[in-house]
Figure 1: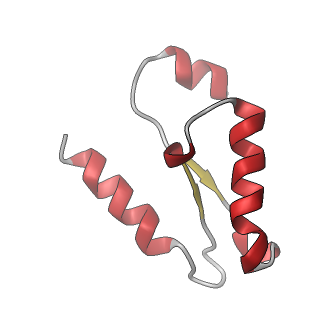
Figure 2: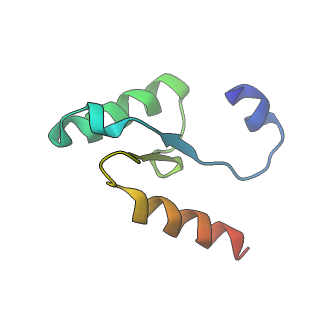
Length: 69
């Protein structure tokens, strides 16, 4: 799916759900691991947790910023 989305040359954002399952101190490390695995820029990946309501504001800010383009 990632390769297909990338091939469209449209803006995309990877939402790394279930961030609540990782210790807060390990989230950045997990995001870096995903970034390295997919070989993409860090700003295209955002952690997210709907259960604990963490990182939601960052995600919506990024989505709103892109919708203005």
